[in-house]
Amino acid sequence: MRTVVTLLRKDLLLELRALETVPAMILFSIVTFVIFHFALNREAIDGQLAAGVLTATLLFASMLAINRLFVAEREQGGFDAFLLAPVERSALLVAKAAALCLFLVVLELIAVPAFDVLLLGPALGPALLGLIAVLALADVALAVIGTLVSAIAVHARAREVIGPVIGLPLLIPALIATARALGPLLAAHTTGTPPSRWIAFLGLYDLVFALLAYAVFDFLLED
Amino acid sequence: MGGQAPAIELRGLSRHFGERTALRNVSVRVAPGATLAVLGRNGAGKSTLLRILATLLRPHAGEVSVLGEPLPKRAFAVRGRLGLLGHEPLLYRDLTGRENLLYHARLHGLPAARVEEVLAAVQMERRAQEPVRLLSRGMVQRLAIGRVVLHRPELLLLDEPRANLDPGASELVEPLIGRRAGATRVLTSHDPKAALAEADLVLALAGGRVAFAGSPDQVSSQQLRELYA
Image (cartoon, rainbow over the protein chains, first blue to last red):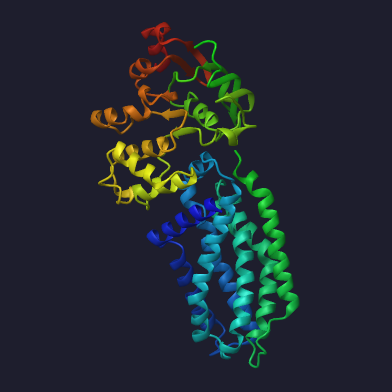
């Protein structure tokens, strides 16, 4: 746990200093909402359409962070420094996934209100708690799978391509479950409760990939 | 010294990168506390050898034992007992010198006071609050040396350790990475005379093969000239 905190603190400090990832994700999301606003030629959207737009935008924005997750390690020797330390390698997986998860939370704190202002028809208030629960589960899926894919891509020559090419197909089930869970929440007369089967699906998906990532991560760092 | 268990023992070590052979059938024994100078032209396999000893690369053939532990099987037991100074300083450019060393200290379970000790030893206390990207190459090298010795490693793997250092700085780091440090050392250098002056044992590589292995007294200037021709 001490190692995870050390690695996470370093990643957050690097992002605070460089501001290279989160601002880009936020800007990307807001521009995408504006594009949807004009492309759909509608003042407001709701229900499943709104859920699809929000989920897809957050997913694509997360790709920016996934592609950059191990850049400092690759370009500044962070991998070697970490591998030379007498610590468990899985700590890097947990710390990177936690950092990515935090980046997504910061993104959503700004992107969701922006989505509400720019595109969403119904008031967000009644759906807020359900929305937070669904996005939290979606963030875990994005963070775990994103870290795994980023670790696979980092040693490859075409790493910017590999992230989306491997990551997006793996994230499709999570995308579907997130959008289906959000659809009723963003409808005009929502009960504020997300469909339990999609919540359970997302939870299970998170668990399976967390275990898978834990099992294979050490091998990804091997020579 | 001959009866002691070796700090490093290589038997028939080979390593390839695809079709290219980086090291072929390299054998050497280094006693605890001794200094091995690895000489050779660019691409001779010096850095590959250091990275194998540092557990960052796996050998493809042969036996490697470091600090009494067989590699790669017992790599975990060796990490934390060695320090690697490579071509890259392994420091984050957007973090300050102090933040970088604190990060490494935490990874090694060391107290923050040790960071201050090391910053003082490399005379970087006054510039320790500046991001590494703003420092000169010589200062970055001093910080990198600080990182390497932070956890008082038993084995120092030094790839051209005095690169970018002026004579004053070179003298400054002598107690940390020089013979006085007391650690077993493997060092590479593009200045063979300086490396030979520090070495107890010389390993000259040419195209990944051993061109010479023995005492510095046994290497003639002619052999060195041929090595670097």
